[in-house]
Image (cartoon, rainbow, N blue to C red; front, side):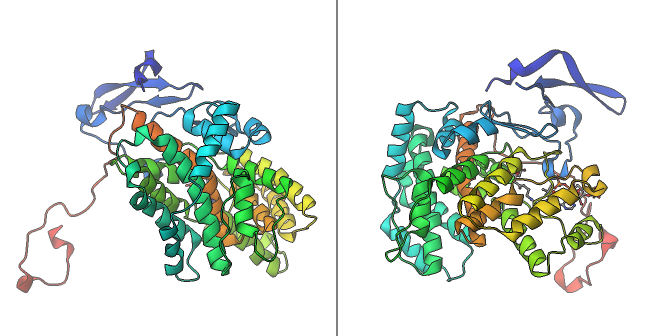
Length: 443
Ligand code: SDX
């Protein structure tokens, strides 16, 4: 990736340290956003930057996803998330993210054939499920088994760029199978194998809910809703789990182990784990009689660690475009299933009240992608400990695309941030027989 062509010719950033002015290039991206290239900072000034949570720090140049947090815009490879969610299947968008363009009919057909070819798990891997304790968290099982793929398919480890299509198809297909198998195992039900005559989402639903005594009937409305949900989760720029995949991959770690690390990062309740935490919050409010205003006051109280889960975002300072689409899908699915979920009413009331409350408005706190998604998963019959697995299923093509882009980028370096050291400057060594309790006199 040649960054020179993004450099502004007649504008520089100036930094003054001890009276000396240093100039740094400003680069302007495809959508007009600007970054200061500080790659020469330490060499020229001896300083590094400090930016907890990397709130102001770009880790790479990327052509995959564009977010505008102020305007609530999300584009994958230049296409708006609304256009893609309204018109595509998840597998089409996965192809777009990984290959950079929407597939032709032929390309999509070949991609589906490859995914079918890799949809089975090695039978020896199935024994893993028997060795996990019965109530093992599905995200722990998923991360462990995805990491083990590199043991069962070592041929994919060397020269990964020559086999990226196969590795991508294998991961997309197998992670879906692993997710469904982990659910079946947790229910003590027989495994349902993938079928080549089903689409990606229809296959997943069938593997989850079909059973020898009650054949599952795939509902196209539910398949369509799942396609949309997975598309909405497919990528999101350099979020916590994607940055984890890039950082681990930057040490030349294989794709499977890098994705396994991303799954672990996504598990966090501040990140992908929020969709499960939202449902637990809504259920608690419901069981307490629906008094959600108490929780809104708790969320506003700085002395109370409680946060309104599903609200707020590091980048979006207006509505998360995904949450608007998911809220619509929510209504469609509940109508189709002719089921009414009081948790949806509570969620809508919380949104209505919070979006007229200065605390949330002043901090630009709006519902994010996790606020409504759990209600749909629950209506489909997916248990809440599988909600973050669903997020991982959706995010997988984005992780693969970002890992591939990093490998292809000749600017790439092993990720190794610096720090501000605030520990003891110099201490005199004391032999153990002379030591007293630890004391700062020697700091
Ligand atoms: C995802 O990065 C991505 O793109 C992530 C994601 C993706 O697709 O990959 O979009 C998916 O992770 C969505 C976020 C899911 N997490 C949650 O819903 C958990 C609840 N939300 C928060 O914990 C929080 O909003 C974060 C973690 C999402 C963002 O945290 P930031 O950017 O570090 O914001 P902050 O903690 O600095 O908060 C700024 C202010 C603070 O108040 P003050 O100190 O200024 O008084 O807003 C307050 C916070 O206390 N605040 C909240 C709040 N979120 C922020 N107050 C109440 N409830 C909340 N949810």
